[in-house]
Image 1: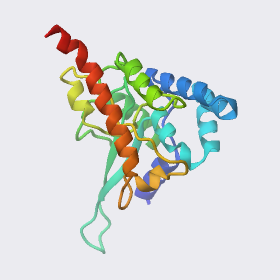
Image 2: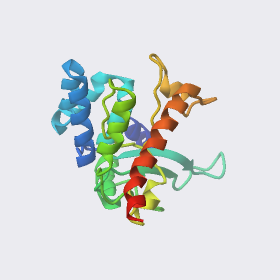
Image 3: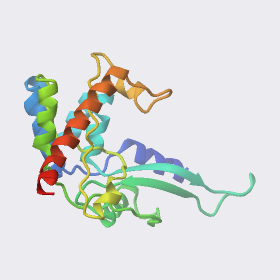
Length: 228
């Protein structure tokens, strides 16, 4: 029963809202590109007092934005008990926590303790630091390539609420750009088809993106070749 209460709490309640600099830049750019009621709603997410209320009204599609504004914790492994007729002394739940840029493991522990109460013992078993800094010095170059290939597009910086290999490169002082553009057709269900069962995207979208990536490599390498 105590485990069920813990899982229900993690599933139904959020940790506090944090508007980090990367997300602030992302939301402002998205709000400006959309305009109207949707732009106003995105701009409202910049205010921590309003953010959760707006997210609740956005529906399931707001999941990515939700994860960009909160530290997240999910139970992934549960262990306890050895025999059907013996109540276990304790049960262990392994939690997968994701921390927003600029925060550390102790920030997550502090917020999590206030959520689950003193009866739950928390211990960090593994910690992998994320990116140390945000460097958007190449954003304008990447954005210009997209605008040239699609004049109607609106490039925006975007925080991916997931784990990538960029965290390893960051420790070496290497900035990672998630520049994998795809020009998807209207009505394409990206959540069902990308990273879903039998994941796939249209071949033409890949060809369009490949040409954009090649142009980025060509433009980025040009000054280095000139100095050589």
